[in-house]
Image (tube, rainbow, N blue to C red; front, side, top):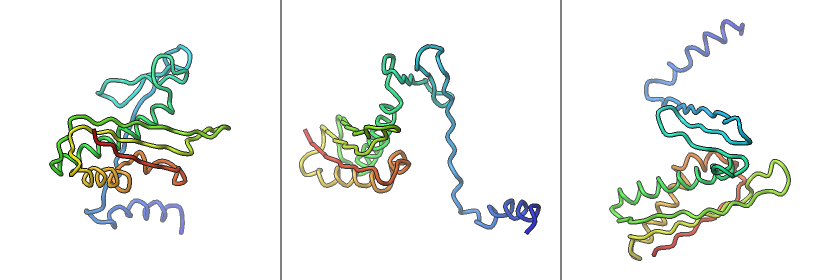
Amino acid sequence: MSSSDRASSAESAPSELGADAPKPLIKKITLDWSGEGLRFVGGPEGVPRSVVDGGSKDGPSPTDHLLLAFAGCMGADVIDILGKSRVPVERLRAEVIGHRAPTPPRRFTRVTMSFRLSGPSSADRPKVERAVNLSRDTYCSVLHTLRPDLELSFEVRLD
């Protein structure tokens, strides 16, 4: 196959998938160095920008942001699922502990996340656990972007 044949084949490939094929979602952010230390500011266009500080002086570090993104993703899923299940939630707090490898690149090797909720009754516990499991297994795109060998554990506490 010549390069022009491959190009025309690649151009026609999406139409072969049909109109029902999902289109990829594209996210774009910008990150600007502040000119001082390891401090950066960034985010998607049109929303308030976040501080990312490699020195953890003016804001969370990049690894802190990773844990925040993971907790935020799962927290949003859990709130959404519980709302659809008509489970009242007054408060949700996710506490995350990340264990990092001792040598570079010092990636997270284990993460423990504990969800503490006020509002659901003890009778709602199965629904809360189901919401956490659905987020973990199906919906949390941040989790599913991480390495598959990351050791994870979850806990639910109802106040």
